[in-house]
Length: 590
Image (cartoon, rainbow, N blue to C red; front, side):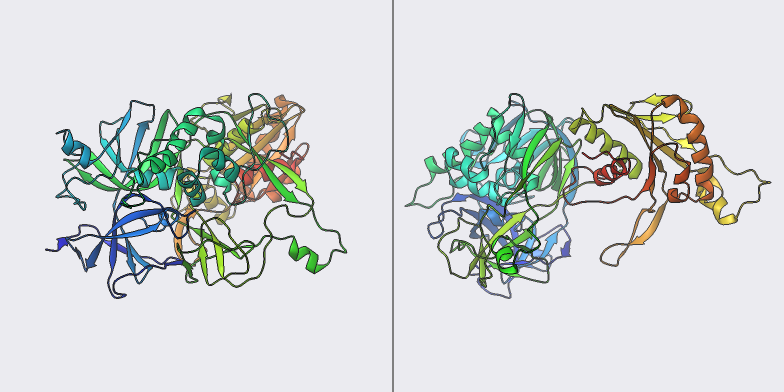
C-alpha cells in the first residue's frame, strides 16, 4: 500500500547519468537509505554501496523498497531524498533543517542499529512508522549524538563517511579499498624535504582536492584520525564474504575529537526530542596548529617553446556542469592518460572558525604529474587508471565548500585575524579602533559613526542621503570600521564602510538581496599617535565622495590606496582575497 511522502520536492538537474539497469525509464525512484559497502568484482578499485530506493508516484511512495549497488564515489550525487529517472537526477526532497553543537570526544557518541537493539532488547533508534526502513531489524549502522541542547541526533554512518571524510570522493574510495600503507602512497606525494618538529606539512596527490587538506593533515599526523580511518578498510576486509556478497555495515566514527558544529537536513521525531539527519549540509573543522601544504607551480615556459611541447606538459581538467552530461560507470577503470573531468557534488558549508592552511609554493620544471591526451571518452570512472587508448576517462568528484555571509565588515575583520594566525611573524597583531574605545581586540566590533552634515551646509541631496543607511528618513548614519595591523616595520590601517542591503543580479541574472559594492582604503603610519589627525580628515571627506575612496586616497599620510573586494576559489575565509589585496597595495605580500 503506497505511503504518503510528507516533504515537497524541488526540481534539479545533475551532470552525471548512472549507467545502471533501471527497470523502466518512466519510473521515478526516490533515494531512501544507504546500506553497507560491497567489493566491486568488475572494477576492483571502486567499492559499491547498496542504496535503497522507493518508487515515487506523485506525493506517494511504494511500501516496497528496491536496492541498487552504486559506486561509493557517487554518493555525493545520490543523496538521500534525491529523485532519479532513467539514471538521471530530476528532483530533491526539501527536508527540515537544523544546526547542533556536538562533543566528538570518545564516549560522547555511540553506534546503534535496529538489528542490535532488537537483539539486545534495547529501545530502537526511532519509530519506523515515521521513516520505515527495508527491514524492522535493519543492520545499517547509525551514529548517535547527544547534543548540547539535549536533542538526540541520529546520522546514518554512510552519510557521515560520505560527507565528512574530506571533500573529494577520492578520499573515501582510497580508505575503503586499500591498506593503510597503500593509502598513504595514494593520498600523499613525497615532501621532497625533511620533516620539521611541530610543523604539519603535507603534499597532496593531484587526485585529491585542496579542500581535503585539513582531513589529510590529521590523517598524517593525528593518531586518532589514523586509527578510525584505518578501521574502515579493516572492517570490509574482515566482514565481506565473496560468496554471500552481503554489504558490510560500517561503523564510521568522527575523525577528530572535541567540540564541533553540524548542519543537517532530515526530520524531527519523538516530539522534537530526536532529529533523524538524512543529509549533512555542513560541519566545522577541528582546531589545531596551522597546516602547511606544498603546492607545485609550473614555471612559465620559455618564449620560444613550441605549442606541441607545451601540450605534452599539460594536465587539463574540464569542469562539467548541467545541462552537459557524462555517463558514470562502475564496470571499468579509467584509462591512463585519458581525459579528466571535474564534477561538483552538493555544496558543503564550513561552520565556525576555519583552520589555518598555508600554501607553500614550489616552482617546478614542466609538469611532473600524469600527462593529458585528447582521447575521446564515452564514459567516465573514478577508479585506478589502467591500460591506455581506451574510451573511459577519469572523473574527479568533490563537494565545493561554502560559507554563510556575515557581512563585509565582520568578514574583513575575521580575514585579517586568519592571516595573523597564518603569518604571525609578518602580521604581529590585529586590532580595531574607535576614537572612544581606542584599540581593542574584543570580538564585538565597534564602528565610528559618520558625522551628518549640518542642515545649513550646501550639500547635494544624493550625498546627504548616502550618508544614512535609511536615506529616505535620514536615519542611522553609516559606521566606519577601522582595523590596525601591526607589522615589524610599521602600522597598517584598513578603513571599511558599513554597507546598505540592496537588490542586485546574481551570475544567473536572478534578482537577489546583498550588500552594496564599495571599495576599502588602506594606508600606513609609522607613528600611531598621528592616526586621529589623519583619520578625521579621511572620515570627513569620504562623505562627499559617497564612499569612493579612490577620490580621497591622496589624504593618506604615507603609503596608501583604495582597494577592491574580490573572491578567489582558493581562499580559506570570505574576504581573504580582499584582505590580501589591501596589504599588497602597501607592499606587503604573504
